[in-house]
Image (tube, rainbow, N blue to C red; front, side, top):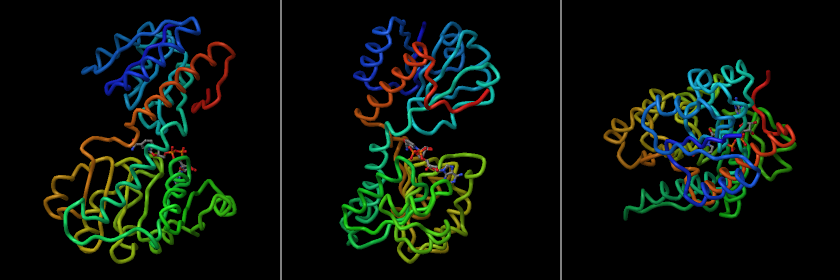
Length: 307
Ligand code: NAD
């Protein structure tokens, strides 16, 4: 089988070497399309691929149409809003992600951003400490749970909310369950956002929620920019000069926000939550192993779509 790795933003070299080992060791061939700059390059490369590994690359209906031999696509990472699952299902292509493989990298970044904002983006002005403060985790999945553990180790109290995890389970996992998202926002000094971007969550964090936060609070987003209602965020920051916002995914109005609010806002120059050597390797190898297991035994663990 021909396994194509198509990455606009390539994996680290060690991850590519590891993927190659796994794929070729299982008797398949590996093709690489890295740093491509046009959709046409991707459409041409997928034409004869049996399997596809991508990172944040968009696998659209057009890609699914062009990939006539494709049987499986694996998104090396957690969020899969870059895959058109309906189009893949229509072509009976199995879609998977690699949950948990980059969670530690993202959790470390969320904690780093929290401290960075407490220390006024490492400028000499008097900052504040996180010990004794309360962090609210919005969605207690792989990343959220790790953020909770790390925050606890820093002496913080941890609250969490997740519509798909019962309150008792959240307690068992060491956090105080919030009765609602509103309660989370109104009672935490920091809220760390870990919800996926779905039709229900897109634009769901806006003025009403953000202004519920207590005085001096900081919102940290390492999930997706789409979950924030940007106009609502801007209005909240305008009305509440005590609030701060840090994100791994620059808002569309970042230049305006930065001009208006200076160091109260921060966005990484380029999404970098999962951009560590370790996460690259873990997610890349997991993707290769999942493809090999699928071809060997028909294993569909982590399948995202149904058809
Ligand atoms: P995960 O799948 O382990 O956890 C997601 C959690 O969200 C689950 O517990 C689930 O119950 C909850 N959830 C699902 N639908 C929801 C909804 N409608 N409202 C509220 N909660 C909902 O994923 P993860 O590994 O923890 O990653 C979380 C998100 O972070 C991903 O979806 C992705 O968008 C983002 N992410 C960003 C980076 C980055 O580079 N910054 C890297 C990895 C993941």
